[in-house]
Image 1: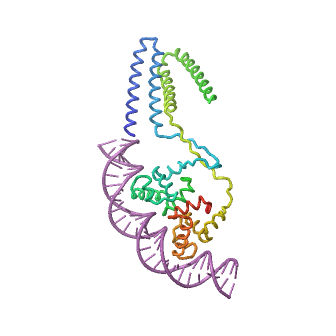
Image 2: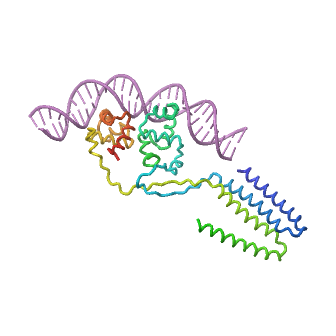
Image 3: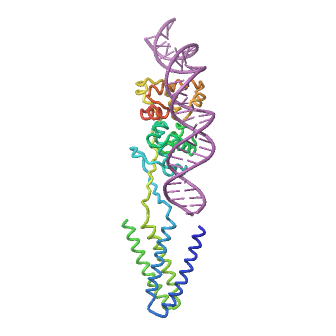
Length: 148
Length: 148
DNA sequence: TGCAAAATCACCCAAAAGGGTGACGACAAC
DNA sequence: GTTGTCGTCACCCTTTTGGGTGATTTTGCA
């Protein structure tokens, strides 16, 4: 972050210098306001694009859409709460498989990983959900709309 | 969308007008190139930012927030299937407690019976449901509408 | 009243689940 | 280059769960 501020400052100074130079340069050539303006415009347009991309890079645009449950359409996990709880995609996946009644071994087989890995994931999952048992994790996950 | 295009057009026209005005205004006042440049710079920086954000915007993540199904009155177990499977009231009660995430010990405490009793009940329950685990029993119970 | 079903409990054993720790590689971010 | 997160896996140990067997008491109903 500090480096960025420094770089911005340097670029600013450079720009001012360039501007001063062009100013003197073109002031003697008279018919230059248009060119000058275009130059500045192009320059700052580029800077603006770069700024826009840089500063807003990581913020995902989220549109909340309320939908009546009605016909129980294709379920979509409440990403709000998922990220709130810091639950990863893998953990959510495993929560779903637990909810469908699979044992750790069966989950491991289905995901092509070791049983220990499944246990690690579920451990961390229970921690994040505040659950002591898989049944409790399922219950919490359902009321929090993490799983159907 | 059409409204937005219109508004953009209007803003553009307005900007052009303003620019023209400032151009004439400042051209007579001589020392105005800096102000003019700064204005154009700020303008195009803003435009650049807008462009950067617009052109590189990710598809907005649409989160479907399901509204709790209206009413969905007090749950009533499907007695048809209960009697079909030969599930007793006590067993159904225990299935509900299992689904709510309680351990056998906690269920025993809540029902004022021994843990062994709970285990026998749940054993017979799993047998009747064809479940090997409590999570599976919960899943089966839910799809069979034995529990909410 | 007597029987069958249901509910209760105990004991043993095996399997599954869970807690804790440590480690490693991949990968993105700063 | 360093840091942090994620996913992966192993090992050890405890708790929970489930299976099997047997037994006693309650209860609903014929």
